Image (cartoon, rainbow over all chains, first blue to last red; front, side, top):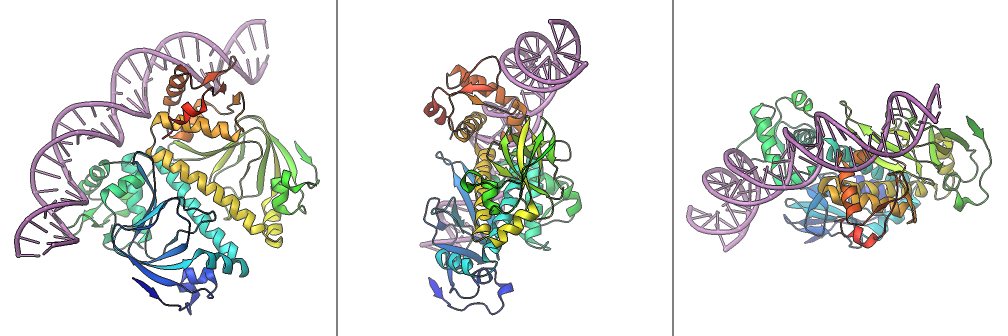
Length: 220
Length: 220
DNA sequence: TCGCACCTTTGATCCTGATCAACATCGTTC
DNA sequence: GAACGATGTTGATCAGGATCAAAGGTGCGA
């Protein structure tokens, strides 16, 4: 179901999407159930998305089904903005996810007007590029253990180093992000045995990092 | 040795760098010998570079020397432009290389003025991002043979499908680009045996692709 | 609340690509 | 043009991570 708000943020700094648009473009909210697709590779880019709660994976597939996840998007993150006329990857909700959406056309139009609009856009793309550069180094040259350690530190960082970290994605998702398979489970167990991570409660998706410095020594 | 030209292109479309600058910024030329560094990771970005002839590798290192090459730059390519205050990777000449250089400060300044300047910059960054996205898929999910086939097709494409293709980089460079090692040599030999590539002349860096479609079937 | 589908861990084995090594060849320098 | 270091190929062996498989465990949906 779609919720029209038409409200534009009064405090643009709290609201990246509205800040980019310059407060003149209406946004809506939308909710996706776990596992549903927000857009597919090749689709015409219609909306830009910002996560309110939940999480999203963006990925590309090879013809035989091999999957590479580019990135995980968490609350506050923006994604889906394209310069060209087709999405270069697919996006799916990892869990129930609420997003704010805005028409690309409106956003791009209003940014062309506003002073510094394209600059904000440039900053966004540059951040994405930096993440991709780091990830190429990880995928090309790091060992399985180093990749898993790096992943945990990345998620920890992006969740502002919480006491208990929540992973919205499955082990297979993590594997497809890190270019691995079941090895992810094995390395997580190894880190648990070394007391560099602890599983919290009954689920395997909540965990704490009792020794971040120790963990960081495993990342190359 | 440094050659001052101060000439600005009369035909901006032939001259990407001058086009970006809007013909008001002076450029110089500079020559690097094989193996020399243009800039290092962490250096302050001073110049933007465009290759006149030769080739350059850009790469990042892990502390123990493992290397990931982000990209190879060929004649016409621009690189080295940074938004932040430090280069995020190093750049070295693969062979004797002549470049046109322009001060980042001048270029960025003149682009801020010129209409559509930031947009050109955005297009440049977006292209780099797209290459990185493709490369993540390759590094995360393709087999050795698929990587080598993809590499040959990429170089062939970027050299406009020449009769005889010239590889300015060593097998080790290719390996560090593809996340492999000696396997590169082995897969090249396999492709030669399948008559999907032929070595030309005495060197192993000149080759032809007698069957591009066949080769493309090896890329996933 | 129950039942089932999915997820995770772990064991056993396999295989792709890494590593180590030897040799040939190339190309650069003197 | 000689000599030597760098580069490239190939063989032999190794190992990291993939794959196949099985057994809980979790949590979601009915």
